[in-house]
Amino acid sequence: MQHFLAISDLSSQELNQLVDLAIDLKREWRSGGNDPILESKVLAMVFQKPSLRTRVSFDMAMRHLGGDALYLSPNEIGFGKREAISDVSRVLSGYVDAIMARVFAHDHILELAEYASVPVINGLSDFNHPCQALADVLTIKERFGSFDDLRVAFIGDGNNVAVSLLHSCALLGMDFVIATPEGYQLPRQAVEIAEDLSSDAPISIEELQDPEEAARGAHVIYTDTWVSMGQEEETKRRLEVFPPFQVNQELLGVADNGAIVMHCLPAHRGEEITDDVADGPQSAIFPQAENRMHAQKAVLVELLS
Ligand code: CP
Ligand code: NVA
Image: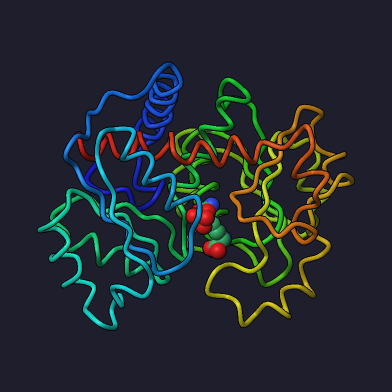
């Protein structure tokens, strides 16, 4: 693995190995701490958008592994504005051992990787969110023991989080169903990639507009904000269209009895998810958030040790 830019860059075996490495590193951390295998390594964290989980979990992951992380805020670098991305990439490559970046246009993370001589990690783009998906599948494996015979239902916007989750399902053999309003479906290209990925062990990919049909019998009910970062101007329209796609007790009632509820966070309580579901017995959202740190440790170890 040279960079970590997309789940779809991995083979099924590589994704399984990352999940298993994350499980080992989590166990090691829980039983007294990680070995400092990234001692003297430094990760630059470039953010063009806000973050709680990505920023803190990467920083703590580096500290636990004996390394360090530098936070570079949206105001600092002026990605592609103050300075060309290709220049930022080559300059940072001379100072640090790896670069994690959260960007708007997906092309920007690709450009960063093209010019970097150190590993680049995608901390979210407008197209995908592979670090999130790795934590998601780690959480699913912990809860269900394996990926066999699972149906994952994504309810809401066909966004960056949905794309990486779909690609993970395709690689790991979990059926995927999404319910979105008309006009907010997954990008066609993302579905085509998933179909190619799943060709060895084909999964079922369903794109629906009825949340109840999608949730019926599902083992994982996943939702995310209706207005992703960068879409703020569309807020009014989106808040009119999305309410039937709320994950609430009624919708959860049609899922499998043992279903878990997932959300990448930040949650907009009362919009895409109700408090009783987010805080209820089937919610996995806080362990899922913690798993960002464990999953990313696996990526860092794979890229840097
Ligand atoms: N889920 C996630 O990426 O959270 P942040 O935006 O807080 O990093
Ligand atoms: N889809 C959301 C995810 C936030 C972690 C966004 O891009 O804003």
